[in-house]
Image (cartoon, rainbow over all chains, first blue to last red; front, side, top):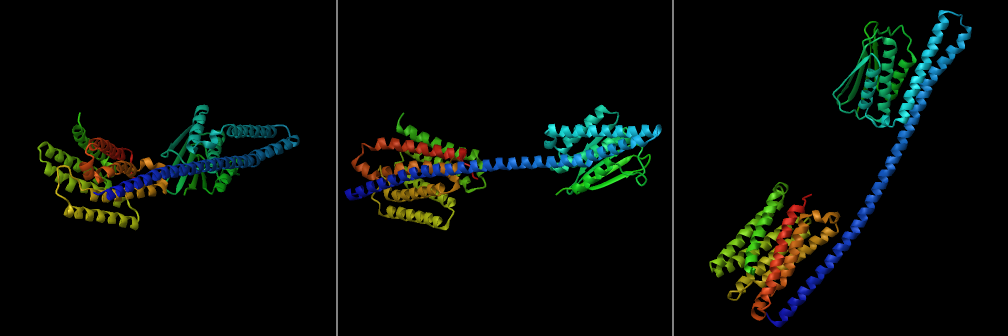
Length: 258
Length: 218
């Protein structure tokens, strides 16, 4: 190797070294630039996530207000109107059995109103109601009834959770709650069966008691029964009620799941 | 402990880096990376054979093995790795061209070489191959720096391999490129430079092991 080749070689190595030094600096610069961009993007995504959360919270709150409004208008309002009508009729009634019966009716209605109000306030102060799965809520209700009344509810399901939205969960819970309350008040039953089954397309709730039952054709539907049907229709679920004297009462509620 | 001891110990490091690859065999068995630990084990064994030849005073065979087999094997495997990593056709063409030019320079040098003395190296083909290697390393880093992968560069197996190769090939370019010249004119700096080369070798194979441990295929 001559002197000239040696100089060229050393020159070449210097150039290569220089290129790599520039390369390392450029790599670090590029990394920092990308990292800053990436961090900014992450902050943006987080902000968007917080916004989405807030908006869904507001949505839930609005839906809650709508539900409470409906509850007051359709249930409490009607019961109060009925109680008011009964009270207005009392001065024109003659003394005796009819008056006592009328007073008992008003008293019953007022008790129902108080109970409904308690439930309503419970859902307001208990955010768990809006966050829990329907199965959790139903289990609590079953425990409550089993612990406080002589009636035993037997709940059976193979599902671990039902993953329903807030409106569906609220409506189905209220329907079942209403049915149970009716059983406790009127059916003289000592057992209620609650079966929940799910397949690919439908979610099925079957609730039945072993009470005295009633003749569906002859009996006028009360507010409770009307409310159950209305809630099911609003939900887009199919609703069936079966009852015969001496053979208990059963409701079947089927909701399509996508 | 002399340089020869650390040179022999280097073979253990090469074999260990190959073992690190086999530890991660499940992750790499379905990709071209599976050949990397195989290459390291073969290289380690070839080096052991080369040292056995030194121990048995078979210097000519050792020279033959290192110059005609081990060095081209290292170059060609590294080029193949870059070829596998290349995503575009121009990149592949460039790598294949580099491979071709290196092989051509290697055969030309064999034809035109002087008589091999005890300390001799094929510096020309080594320089050609080394420059191509540095170009491919530079291209890899450039491609990495403009992609999203730069954010998680430490998870890139090829990144660690390239860092190791960069240190070694860049450091070895003056050493092997000027080897014959230094033997003739600057024999006194050769042992000192050899220590540096040894350190760079250790660094490279350690980073190869790191590439198996930290690197993720996806």
